Image (cartoon, rainbow, N blue to C red):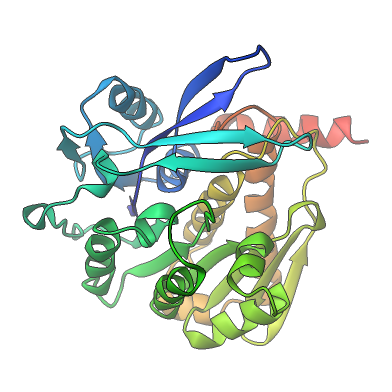
Length: 316
């Protein structure tokens, strides 16, 4: 079982028609849990879900995808909202409504505990930097047993009202306490505007993680292990949008590690370049399928191989 902790929110995605928006379940951790379960890996979501209508949509997305909900705290506060803006190339930017919402109204009595069956715990995105959620999830991960793999995705959102230095301090604390980190060149450029992204990734790996993976959009993916770099090209697809792509990649990476028997601290530390490349390729395929269709809609395992084959045939 992989426990995914963090926010589950509603993405308000613009429709082609003027003044029309579609409300879709989203949030980095929610998307990662959904993608893991659709890939056939046991996943449980740990967070606060609203009892309102938007919360019901989120709950339905998680449950219909096979995500376990026994770690969920049911909340009376409204669901968190993200307003999505789309560029011509399909890339997305976000604005957030977070004050007083279910994801960020944790109470001391609600402090969660990892179940004994937990193989890995993944945390990221808004809940890693916004209080009181950040404290809740830091305690959760800090209390994990020595055999639990810790995964982190900063999923940096500059639109949050968090100063860069404070944001950086939050992220670096998570990095130092993680075994696997998935980030992007955009994240690293925002956090360290005067440092090349891959230089920052190597520095992060030396701070604690066994593996740091950097998504670089159309330039592909780079995995940093020990002092080596492993590069995998991006899938050449017609991009509908990039919503949920990084989250799907993270899920694909964790699923690949688990299926190859290396989702364990010592095994990750000894991970060879060829094995890492295979895991990165699988994760990149999962992300490519997500990019090829609107919204955070990661592929099911049963459709992945056929869909990837179709995408490859389309690109010749």
